[in-house]
Image (cartoon, rainbow, N blue to C red):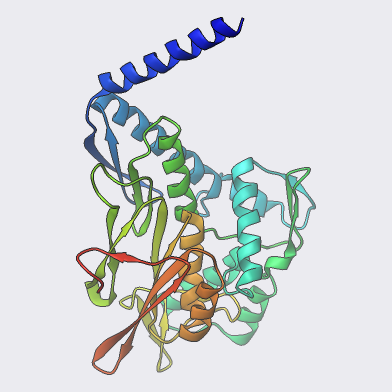
Length: 339
């Protein structure tokens, strides 16, 4: 019996080795599609196109499925169906929706509400203010803010249910959804044995293992005014940028960003942009927004409190731009030398 088992193990090893040899060197394959309303790019290193195309198509399908779950623009999405039952008690949800809300709850707690997916009513009011050029009135803002608060989301992990405590609550996953989708798309590709891959949903990027013969993927960090703040070499990591200094509105003599502070219901001020590098896409996505909301000092403390996270923050200083690099257990490797 032992001899048979040993022979079987040897034969399996030989089969694996011969299969690896037959696959040959890895080639680079790239594709693009519009997903979740943004240009999406997938790069895969594979032995041949058929395998790369199959993996990419599976990743695009995964993103499309997640859009159907998490979109706040589609009335029939699972997220909107959940919001439609706000105040009615526990609602059974899919594993993905439960997971993204579970992660969001932890991030809301850690950021003291600077990241909060219950911000939907206030976001809708702020969008209208940006269009009309008028700040929302105190009564309007008070009504919207009464429906905001991550503590009002009740999760039951055993039953996999979600309860929104007040009628009229509306969830907005815009600050975490694309990072979550990019992470799951990479996992879909890796499950097909192709670990050297990159998925980018606009500014939310997740990378797998390094390309062949290289130290990492060269990922550009976006600076203000369309500039590049340099490029970093990354493997098995995620990058997200928030706070484009070009997206702002002036209301009643004050300049507000398009990013809204969930604690006030108004756009943030200060012109800060933040790129966060983290182990996972959903974490990078949410933290980049939270850093902008918290500002330079509190944002730096948030990054330093997280394991294996780094951030590059930029803000206007007179006619120029100042930059601060924060590294917490992750030493950034800059392409072409440190910038």
